[in-house]
Length: 411
Image 1 (tube, helix red, strand yellow):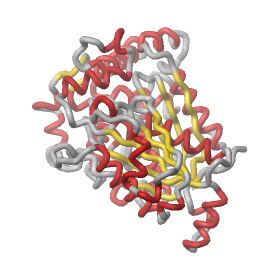
Image 2 (tube, helix red, strand yellow):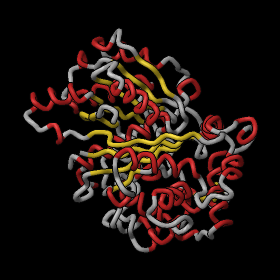
Image 3 (spheres, one colour):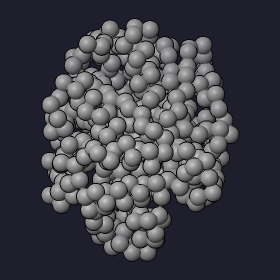
Image 4 (tube, one colour):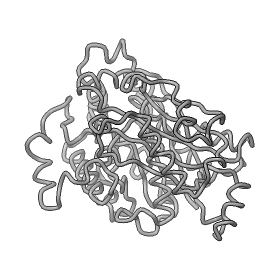
């Protein structure tokens, strides 16, 4: 068995903020998240031995690469530590966590700081959509295409329609749940957009039903978001000493119980061609989930009490429902109609609001999901706390299902 990796705490910036309008740069976002995570974890900067940053397109949105060099700028005590940056489109944050975890498991370092960050509100929507197109095969899938990723994920819905049938009402219900959950979350981007009295009415009228691509409307799409999220990881030896100095038991500290990581071919068309004889539309995503549960020693999805999944579009959450095993392949609609994924359902999905309600700063989403899992299993999620949450699963997807990273966090 690999050495356990503990999560001592973390921090998320307010995903509703527009940092450029505030006159702030991506580095200010990094600064807030780094110091917020260290304070939340109760760890001194000098105790951090290595740092990893997940970021998709800093060179495009913020005209900045070499992000690891900013750790020493924003905190003098971090100057000189080894750093690295990880890019896997929308799964960049999770890949950064896996990189840091591997170093702790290998015994190279006792502690690691993992930061996911993206500043996206620096360009107009069409330019931003073009930047996001580089998460697919740009020359073949995105060049000259307006908003390529909504079109790719609309095709995911088309594939479900072709194989199993798909009703728009089920996608709409996914959006309704995520927006409603976001109202509970003080860091969610859309928390102030709706009230109980007007959410359903607004989502079914006006700009929210404006078509984006194929079956996808505005309400089916995640938000353009500025944000950062950071967590502090530790070895068992450090965590044991940390628990002792805080007067708590070691088993009160959450840890990464299991993980899965698979990479599919880049083109959406190639993914679908691979899966034609498979009951799962994205079998590599399914296998990442299966691997995470196997490594965590869990029999199936019903051994966790909540899921934070990658709802970049309602179609991706629809896919996640059957890929996690809540239903048989093609029957995600059953879990939606039966209320299984509701906040008070048998297995809530995205109690934080997910990407649609909570926001999707691309490089930060994977770290944000794990941070929310930590909050759930430590009873620190506030108004969006799932009662009795001891283990939480996450799924972070980069590109059109190209990179899939699943994790199980628990105590």
